[in-house]
Length: 308
Image 1 (cartoon, rainbow, N blue to C red):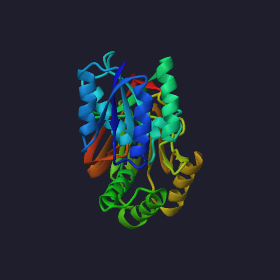
Image 2: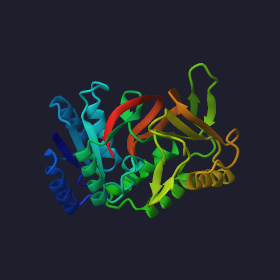
Image 3: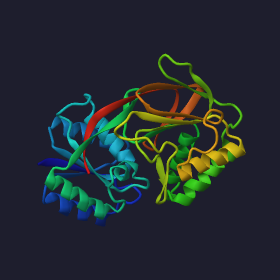
């Protein structure tokens, strides 16, 4: 079996010691070449190389962002039998994709699970999403969700670590001090149905949970799954009472409040579009992609083979 190990050295939980353990462990089972990413977009090029060289597996050490890039490289020509499998070792702050597959959050323990999966050839095929011309594995967001990621990226560039407390304070600051809470910019449309307008925030999930606050799952769409279409959770009111209901729903995985008045909740969707009246921040798998005015989301079942 031939493969590549893609290491993101800037990921939150990645260290030289973890990398060394992982390399020694996987090298016993896979003819493995180690590649360290050096810049944004590098992992996508590595995924394309794995596709072109007809490799069997790509192992990733990093967060959801590095998997996102690798998958977009692997699927450059679309789904098919030539696409290498993925084995992902959690090394970021959230690690939504790896944890949704049932892997331990600890990278060394996850390595042990994946080694057993490789030896037994234990894989599953999961569905993923596509946002316009880009694939995503876990989630997408327009509005406040992406604004928070932009703010966190700015703090990382300033040398700050992405801790749960920093995410919390950034979220509160963004919601109550910087976001326009009076003029919603988004609307959601499905083919053949009336559009839903007056949306401030749109969260699209390909799996559950949406993300994590430390070890606690945050999950506005708890029924989202790799085995179904995409789920949408959208907020239509940013008043303090509705913000409290939204927080309760996300923290407790509870359908708090009236979804008809305050929220838009769509489950198992194959095709829908979010449009904005003005350019609005957009993120995929925790990676900021700038501002957009329209994004079409399409679900693709049974696309990606993963070890678990």
